[in-house]
Length: 111
Length: 112
Image (cartoon, rainbow over all chains, first blue to last red; front, side, top):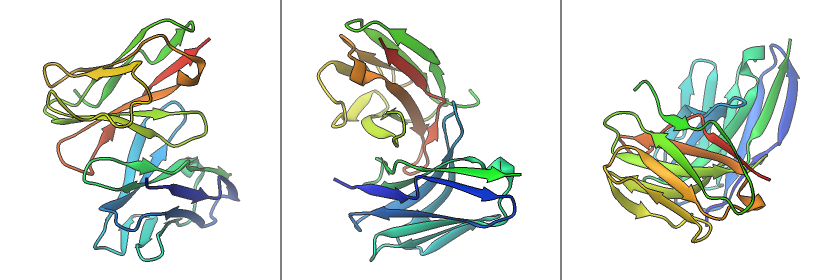
C-alpha cells in the first residue's frame, strides 16, 4: 500500500516569507502527484498536478517538484500571504483513479 | 450544478443508529468517489463508481458500510449500526477524467 508522509505537520511563518512543504511516498510507481488545499469546513481544492513524466509544475506563486526516484515532492509558495493559511495535502495516484493522501501540513501565515 | 453537493453537512448519530449520506455530483461526471477523513488525517479512499457500476470498494472498512449509485448520478453512502470510530468527515468527489476530481464540502459525522 502506498504510504504518503508530509513534514512538517504544522508551520507558522510571517507574511512575505517563502514556504517549503515536503511530501514523501513509498512506491515510486505512481501515475501522478497532486497537491491540494483544504480550508476548515470545506472540501479540497486542487492546486497542482504533476504527471509522472514531469519534474515540476508552476502556477503563479506556487511551484511543485517531483523526484520519483527518491519518492519526494516539494511544494514551494513564494511570498506567502495571510490568505495562504490552510492545510496543504499531498496525494499520489497509485493508479489512474485512486488517491493516496498524506496527513497534511497546516500553514499559518502571520500578518 | 456548480459543484459537488453533499448533504447533510453535519450529522450526529447515536451509536447503533443507521445513517445515509448523500452526494450530488457535477452534472455529466461519470466517475464518483467516496473518501473518509478522520480528524487530523488525510482522506482515505473508500469506493469508486463509474456511472452506476461500483468498480472498487476495497476501502470500505467493514460490511457495515455500503454505497450505491443506482442511476449513475446521485450516490448514497450508508453506514449501519454506527460506532464511535465511524466519526469522520465523509468526502465525495466526481470527475470526467482520471486525476481531475472535484471534491464536495463533506459531511461531518459524529457518533455519540
